[in-house]
Image (cartoon, rainbow, N blue to C red; front, side, top):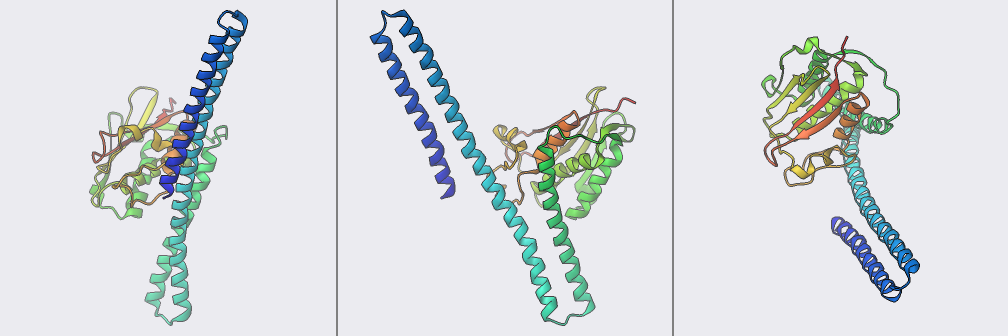
Length: 302
């Protein structure tokens, strides 16, 4: 119902804009017919008509963008509310059980472990939102230090294996040419670690039960180093490749409907890469054919 209502709103905004443009055109043509012998009124009428049409077009574009932005924000609020509610409900249930029942030490420790995992999940979501807010501040200063690419990627891989309980063969990385241990960049280690982790987490979430994810560190030229994450997941349609980096944007299709997320992961990735003088982009041969996300960063020449 909500999606249908939004589509109707967008259709109404476009229809209204077209009607206003047609009305302006009719009025302008009438003005030209009535004043075709008068040069000054004719020229002024044409100029005024141009301003009206430009205003109508810009207003329609603005309305459509606002409707879509509100739709993305609503989707984000729904997703983040669900993501927050699930661990909170779980923690409350375990606490009530501990309060009402006498449990042995083994059961209590199991409950504590689950509650700690739920707490970490909550902290992760809160940190994701805070990172998105910081990433939106384009002029915020970046603390820069020399960071070796190899250990950075390895730490992100170790975290992903532990977080998603992946077998070693499901998640591997390799370097192309110069060993990753000899490559370094200048930047904020925590931010870059977050960017790489977000890309790997996305690859795992949007891959089948037995993911096959490969991370490759390459040097396309003397100025940049690229960290490429290739998965065997649901893939992305060509028209969605740029949109997935927008804030709150999530690809909606049957293959991704059950995937949880806030729509902030890749937005944070690109924002961090650009804050460090690089960029991030996605490549895919289509739906069901996997995705490759690349983080490109300037190399440290020293």
